[in-house]
Length: 212
Image 1: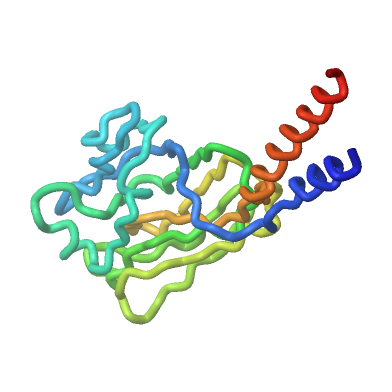
Image 2: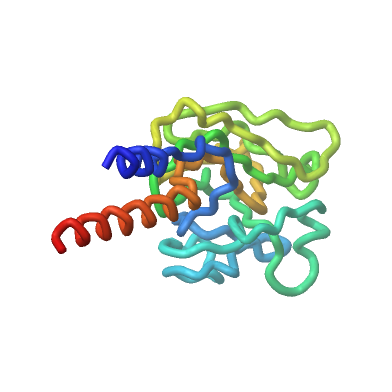
């Protein structure tokens, strides 16, 4: 019996939590708008009209979590026919609600914006707000697409992140991707699970022999 208790105890040993990229199950927002080109979330998979300006989208995913991070300005990346990488807004400060499959301890969220140094009215946003945490967004000198990361390590574990992007006055904001870094909870070591199964089988056999 003592050996079984020791085996069961060893099986409870867990790997420490590790940081990893997590992807939301869905996100909801108002679709992008049109200008020189169409800045909609045309690959969106949920409810709503992905080809409709400011259409309410919910229950799906699309351009913002497809793993494609734009490396060129909007007037290059959006010019070819078809679905470009950017979703863009001029009339609203977009609110995007990301829903995950479980509670996560988030370390950070990263927004991938275009800049263009004001060309076509496209500028970095003034600031972002995520679940009550806010930060100003710096305006890089280069005018190239850039990533902005907001620290979320002080948030309690959550399965939902609501992000508001506050545009610069009278300017477009273009977003190609949003990525998330989270602390994954510890899980049992696979070898320990095998050990537990063996210990339980052995205990059952011992009890069977005693009865016979």
